[in-house]
Length: 267
Image (cartoon, rainbow, N blue to C red; front, side, top):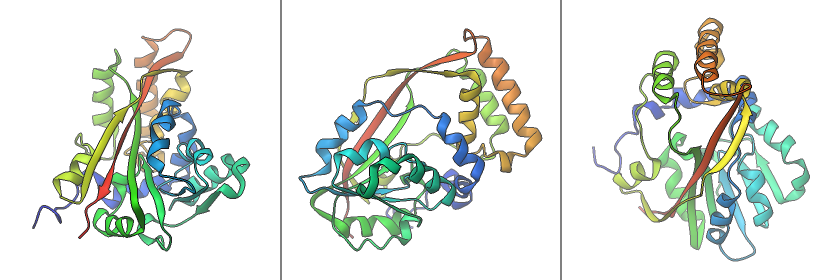
C-alpha cells in the first residue's frame, strides 16, 4: 500500500463516525464552548475575494456556520446527520438565504459549483479523504483554500489525569490515539499545508452539569452506545471529580481554536 492510499487511523473508522447521527449526541452539542471570536478574524482573509461562495463540510449543529456566514456571500452547509442539521437550521434561521443547508454526506455532495474556500470545523477527520479531496481540489477556485478548524481547552486542567482514566474506561472507542488531521493528510501526500494559526485563549464559564453533558457530544460517548448504566456511572464519577476543583458548581475553562489551511494535492 502506498502512503497516499494508506488506511486512516482505526479510531476514525466509519462505525465511530456514525454515532454523530444519534439524536442525543446532537442535543449535547449545545454544551460545547463556542469558538473564540478571533477564529473568524483569522479565517476571513482566507475566504478569497468577493463574491465569496464557500462550502462547509460537516456543519453539525452550526457552531462554526453561524460565525462564518456573515463573512461570505453564500454558504453551502453540508451535514449528513438530520438531527444535527435540523438544530443548525433552527439556530441559523436569521441568516436567511445566505446559508443553504443540505442533508447529505460530504462524499455525496454534487461539487457542481466553484468555491472560493472549503471549510471543515472538527469534521474532516471523519470523511473519506480519498473520495472527497480530489472533488474539493476540482471545485476550488485558483486561489481557493481548504480550511480546517477545531477548538479545544487551552493548557491543562487539574483534573486531567483522572479524566483521562475515566475516558479510557468509559469510551466506546477503544481504538483512539492522539492525532492531528493535517499531519495525517500531509503524511499521505494528499494535502499541502500553507499556514497554521492559533487564537488566544478565551475564558469560558459553564455549569458543572453542562460541562459533564458536553462529553456526550464527543466520539465514544454517545449515550445510546454506552448504555444507560455506563453513561450514568461516567456522569456520576466525572461530576464528583470536577466538583472538587470548582466553586458553586461552575467550571472555568480557557478555550482556544487552531486553524490550518492549504490545498489538496491534485492526483
